[in-house]
Amino acid sequence: MHLQKFEIEDAVFYSPAALKDNFKIFFAFSSRKGGFSKQPYHYLNLASHVGDEPFSVYLNRTKFLGLTGIKNLQPLISVNQVHGNIVFKADNEFIENIYLKEGLRKKLTIENSEGLVNYLKPEADADAIISSQSAAPIMTMGADCNLILIADLKLRITASVHAGWRGVLNEILLKTLDELRKNYNSKNSDLVLYLGPSIRYCCFNVSIDLFEIFYQKYGRELVFNVKKIKDSPKYFIDLPFLLKNAALKSGIRFNNIYDLGLCTCCSNDLFFSYRKEGKTGRQGAVAFIEK
Image 1: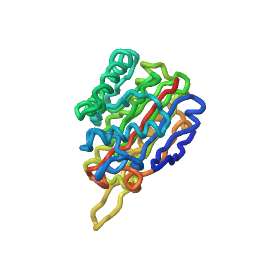
Image 2 (image 1 turned 90 degrees about the vertical axis):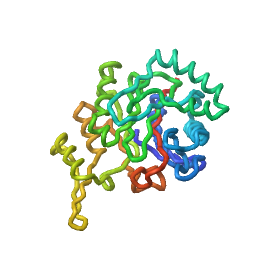
Image 3 (image 1 turned 135 degrees about the horizontal axis):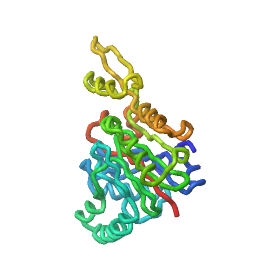
Image 4 (image 1 turned 45 degrees about the horizontal axis):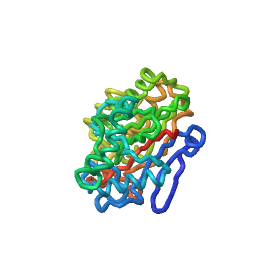
């Protein structure tokens, strides 16, 4: 169930086709290709909080969902990502009492700019979303930060996780896995993880102060490299390795972890990269449970 590259029209995204075929769970990591946003958010920016025109974001989200085969007409469930370890649960009560009713109201007011902003509004301050509901697509976003999609294959539960370096230190991935085990009764053997595009070991150079913070937490687990540049050392940290290692230590099986392995900073022609560009858009990690 490895990630495959899909090129439809002028858009590019990555998805494990076998996951959809065998379990009716759809995962996708978007790229920057194929959208409507203008510079510096060009082109398929899925984030409403970076300064892009709301209508462009709406068009981008609508196009992306259409290309990936998601027919749901409700808004994507997203969160205001704060680099912490809060997990938002899109449970039955939320879906029935808020999401469906609010989605209908948002669609009725989408004709004006205020309605568009409301339609795109995130649900809460959090850095991960869990959903066990069909017809309710969830998404986290990033432009260098790690995006992780999780599925419980037996119970058909999904999670989308945003983990920048602060999120790694705050153990947002472990918090999400703990929520799945404690509140949804997920078993480690049933959980699969997918890591999407993110800044990689090759490009994530950090200050000595930040390196020391990571070293105090991870010690010998920390995979890093030191390069001498004009006699000034630069430290490079492998965040995806730390995330995968944390998942393994928590009980996730090695063969249940998949990594796209692509660096957003190296490939900013294909992905948004905050480090490379500064003001830019965001790609998304979308999960959707089919009925």
